[in-house]
Amino acid sequence: MKILISACLLGTCCRYDGASKPCADAVALTAHHTLIPVCPEQLGGLPTPRPPAERLGERVLTKDGTDVTAQYRRGAEEALRLCRLLDCEAAVLKERSPSCGCGEIYDGTHSGKLREGSGVTAQLLAAHGVAVYGESQIKELLK
Image 1 (cartoon, helix red, strand yellow):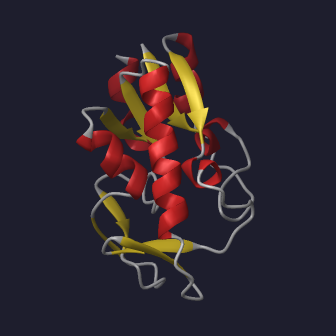
Image 2 (tube, rainbow, N blue to C red):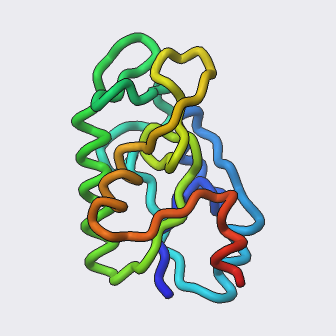
Image 3 (tube, rainbow, N blue to C red):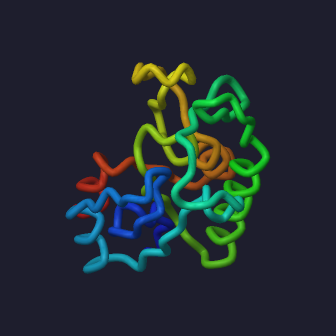
């Protein structure tokens, strides 16, 4: 199966802080599936590193209050376009991210508190029928 995957989970330094979040389970997926690495935030035109951002309702705001919603939406649309173009059946995305988080994201106050919800990209992919998984759910795909 072809799977869209957050590039930071494979070791690409594309997170807001210029780091990555390599995940051994994500790398293990390469033995069974074709992975398509993406960083929706970069696809939306944001630099790396960039100020931390959180989703507050339908908007995405950086810690200093700058509205980056348009870039997050553009990145989500590009991720969906790649998903369709390359016939990806699922996506494995970085949990808690304002772009990629699925099921739980930071609450938008930059206080470290979590709330129920999904990032812009995860929400768009799911709305278009793509099965979205967080990195803690990768073992389900390895079975």
